[in-house]
Every structure is written in structure tokens, then in C-alpha cells.
Image 1: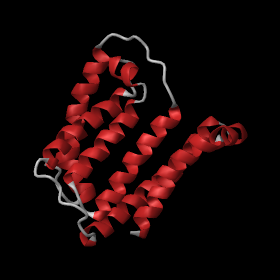
Image 2: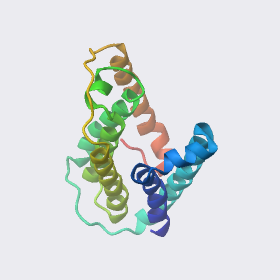
Image 3: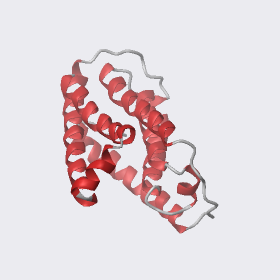
Image 4: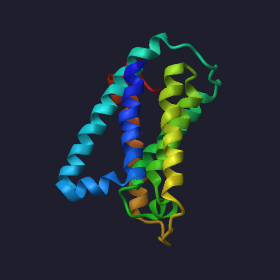
Length: 184
């Protein structure tokens, strides 16, 4: 469990610390924007690897905190699909991005909630509950955002189409490799 918590502190804490402290601007001013991005990506990657390793090690022995509802896995299928579409839409200037302003955070919330509905063990609650709480707090910290009036366009359709393909690839191929179990 220690690796899981350490990974969460490094990954989520690092993201949150940049938002709260203004550290990003200070470090960028000293070393430059691209070196900062590289350094931060490395730190985030270390945290991400630790949390995956910690989750994989802790989950087999983690006690159930609640019994997931029978429909939880189906809700997870839908919410993870939505999360991938939202994540991709954050890189495409379409109606989805303009409406949500921070679609990646909305995607993290959907992903985390879906997994909490499908898994009631302590390891899952710690991992996905932490991501859900982080995404909620981060969205609040961003404050009220200005929404642009953008029409639905091909970028939105691309995010949906590509999102479905990525969702299938993750569910059938990557999830078993990374986590030892098919998502479907």
C-alpha cells in the first residue's frame, strides 16, 4: 500500500502543488518552459509507475469496503468510454471542449467514478477515490471558466470516433497487459 500512496502523492500532489503554489511559473522562469515540462513529465511518470505498481501489489490482499452493485461494471464501461472521449476532446477545438472548458478533468471524474462503481476493494477506493477527489478540487481551483460559443464540428466527431477505438483497444489489449485482467 505504501507504493500506491507514495505514487498518488507524487502524481496528484505534484499536479496540485503546481496549481496552489505558483511553483510552475518560478521554475519555468529559471530553466525554461520545455525543460520544465520535461522535468515535470519525468516526476509525474515516476509517480504514475509507483501508483500502478502499488495498486497491483495491494489489490490482491485488499479487503472489500463495499460490494459493488451488479450494474457497476456496465456503468464503468459507459463512463470509461465517456472519459476517453472527453480526454481526447481536450486536444481538439470543438463544441465538447468549449462547453466543458476542462474536459480532461471531467474525463478523470467519469473514469474514477466508473471504477468506484465497479470495484469496492480498499485498493480501488484509495486509487480511484483519490483521482476523483483530485479532479473535483482541481476543477474548483480553476474557478469559473469562460465558455466559447463553438458549433459542433468534425473535431467533436473525431474525438468520439477515435475515443471509441481507443476505448476498445484499452479494454481488450492494454488493460490486460497493464492490469492483468480484461476490462470487458
